[in-house]
Image 1 (cartoon, each protein chain N blue to C red):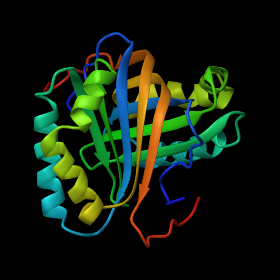
Image 2 (image 1 turned 180 degrees about the vertical axis):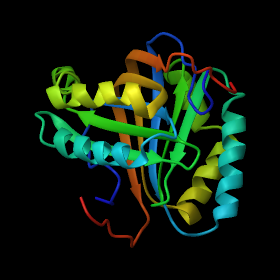
Image 3 (image 1 turned 180 degrees about the horizontal axis):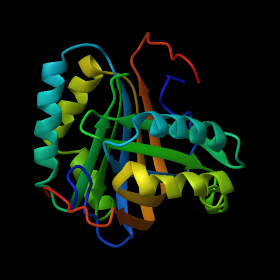
Image 4 (image 1 turned 120 degrees about the horizontal axis):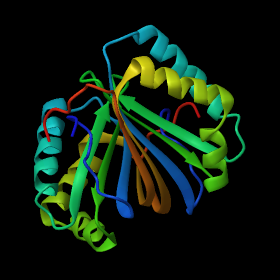
Amino acid sequence: MPEGLAATPEPPYYAVLFPARRTPADDAGYAAMAEAMETLAARQPGYLGIESARGEDGVGITISYWTDLDAVRAWKQHAEHLVAQRLGREKWYEHYFLRVARVERAYAWSRPGVTGRGS
Amino acid sequence: MPEGLAATPEPPYYAVLFPARRTPADDAGYAAMAEAMETLAARQPGYLGIESARGEDGVGITISYWTDLDAVRAWKQHAEHLVAQRLGREKWYEHYFLRVARVERAYAWSRPGVTGRGS
């Protein structure tokens, strides 16, 4: 699987869409927490993958993928994740959306001859 | 609505998730086409909004929002969009996913005192 994209299975599964606008505050703390949360999410039951992109304008999008709504709910309520959510509202975010969506169809394309790197 | 985030209505509605890894080729042509497609999408029936973020590692995520599957299908088949899709496979992308998802729940948060800019 190409680095940075999630090797999701055949639908259906769930996606948690998290587009956000950052404050200018505490880049280092934010980056450390984002990395810790990606590592922690990957150890939760029902986790399927994560994709994340953040531009220089401060708008970022993270999408995490889960087998079902129970897995989505359990991750939302995970104790360490709750701390991260609180710190996000206190320091790191100006605005965000949280959208829970059921993936119904999916299609992957790779350039012929390009080999994926990483997981 | 804060700049860069989409002012979506109450669910349900549809999201088209488009995470992609770019080639290093033709940044200017890619940027021009991305902007043209955002403008064109916004004029289509059933369009609800778009969010996009691209990091320096070449991984980007664009999410467009639509009222229903008919609107998703019509945009996919729009003549100018088909040209953009072909050029994307020829020049701009190494890998991508296209996922169609039904948004079932959504929640917005804004920092108290922060006023949204733009549309």
